[in-house]
Image (cartoon, rainbow, N blue to C red; front, top):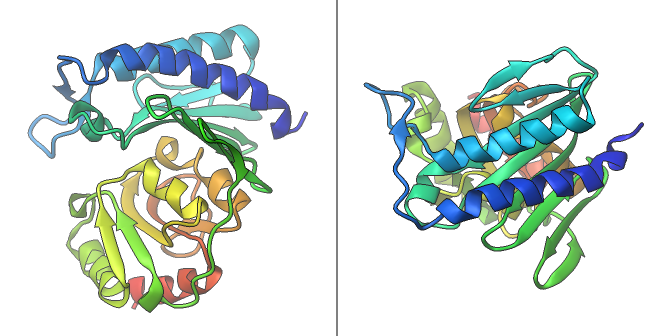
Length: 260
């Protein structure tokens, strides 16, 4: 069975999770802090409700598959197929009423990212890919995603969610790339990666990410013609220090600056 066989099921998970989330968006929903005493790391009932409904459906249809989720941990994580779920990537934007968040539904096979979707139920956009092709379905229709050519950082648009994700050494490395880039934008979480895949941005550089932050996005970036690795050029599936680029030339240029 190939990853493409799961596309209809991923659409079902997206519909179920979106229905669980949307009643909470732009409501009086309260957020608790998962990291008391440290940087604010919010979680809401919408996060939990979304992951619960996806886990339930996966167990019903694929009881032998593994699941790794942000809110409820791992089960059967050494299975051939493992679902990697971030119910709301961008919870800070969510609780601020901003539509710059999404549900990440990733599927790994034998440890490699095989299929992924970023679902934004409020804007009704679904970005998905299998590493060979990436697609956007939206109210405007369906179109193939393709990264844009960008041979030099001086012409590049760079993004990162927040400088607070970097330690001092990482922040210094990021600033070297930022100084070379044409434009830098902050605050987009998973949306920035999808904009790279769609050809509107060129580069995302982040750190301290977890597998559920990246597995769904890798097949989208790669399916659109881009590249996504760690800062030392290794596979991105385990998270950590991550760089995603639409063009391999600026990926190489940025890596050189990050590791200088």
